[in-house]
Each structure stands twice: as C-alpha cells, then as structure tokens.
Length: 140
Image 1 (cartoon, rainbow, N blue to C red):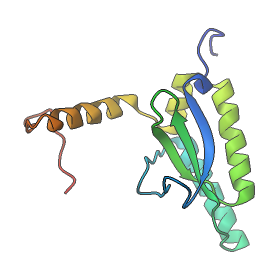
Image 2 (image 1 turned 90 degrees about the horizontal axis):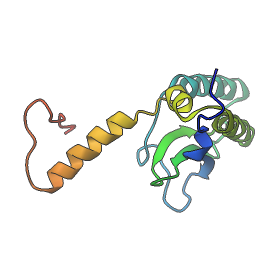
Image 3 (image 1 turned 60 degrees about the vertical axis):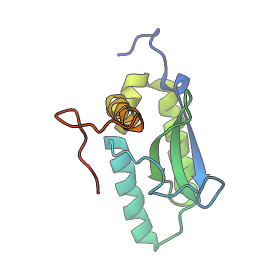
Image 4 (image 1 turned 30 degrees about the horizontal axis):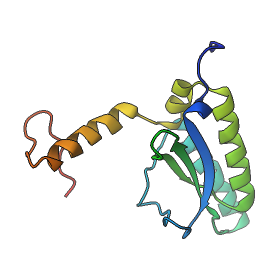
C-alpha cells in the first residue's frame, strides 16, 4: 500500500518512444539499458510474439528519461507499432500509479550506481588517478 503523499514516478520521469535513426541517434550502444523484472518480461513476450508472426521491424526504443537532467534511465526495444503503443501505455500508467521507488525497483533503476560512476568520472577529470578499493575496474 502506498501513501497518498508519496510522489508518483511521473513527477521524476517521462516515457516516450524514440525512432531509430532520429535526431540524437538512439542506438542500443549509445544509451543506458536496464534489465529490471518488467523490462525482462516485456522483452521475452515481445520476442516470442515476433518469432510467431515472423520478424517485423522495430519502430524504435522505449525511453524513460529523468526530468531533472534529461538522462536516459531505461532504454528497451519498443518492437512493432502495436507493441510500442501498448508498452508506452503500460509505462505511462505505471508512472502515474507507482511511487518513484516502486518504479525504480521494477525497472532496475539504481541511482546509487549512477552516483558512484559520476563521482569516479569527476575525480578522473581532475587528473588524479584513482587507486585502491574505491577505484572502478577498467573496461578496456
């Protein structure tokens, strides 16, 4: 049960479908992917449906964007036009009914990880190498 005073997720996030190749080039590698339980379930259903019908091209990506800084916090394949409309409707309904913490938990949004990464990047820009237990392992 949620409190009537708890802010809804729509106060912090907005959802939209972005077309592939649109301004800003939304591609899987250029934005953040989340794999919360809802995203995994929707991806599984969309994939199974696409296999049954034969492969149809995707209209783009469902993007959930943080209002405060415009950061992409969720980016999943939207599927066909019908899937994209249903997915967008579902996410907007969740934004209107779930609290911020419920929505973040359901979609796998972890603000702590983003804060740690940003702190790491800020410290590296100062020219000081980061070593020890606070350092992040290199991806390369």
